[in-house]
Length: 241
Image (tube, rainbow, N blue to C red; front, side):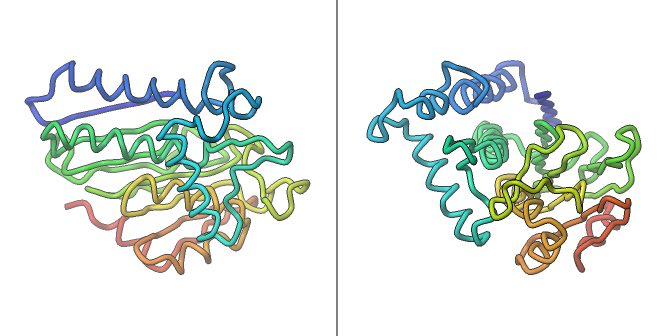
């Protein structure tokens, strides 16, 4: 997936950016279900015992189980074939960890985006909050809503680009067609990403789940193109300071 990193701080150098990209490469090599050599594929193929899992793998599985409990079972990394796919959590978790790499290097103003999920900190090059666009799921060239953030994460789950890759664990045989896009703003991209995935699996009830989550806001578009937002979402569309 495409990855974009922008560091506004003038002290940032190529070495700093390369460390972040190296981290993403490490994550891909470990968690990609499309690579025969990845640790998750080897686990799924029965080639690695649980006692021999890497520390990062143990962390991701523990966080996945925690998320499953918090979402009432709507987040589940076990597919219908019994194999594991933690992609719904790993991407946001990796972006968040990448942001911590930049923070440890002393940077205060940056933007990291991977596959449409975003983590920011501080201000953009114009000294303003970072502006993140939400695409029209029926016309990917059109931005239908713009949010303004300076420390939060923004994650969008949907079927308009990758098709039916998100499933409802409680109705595995029924494709999700009621909604086509759900964007979540959270305190960081890890939190936003995992709950966006679970909320999308909840279909039309997902936006209600986000409404009840303290510190989170959401914006959902249904199959008819109608949008519904949580009660506090508009504060992010009006803050361009």
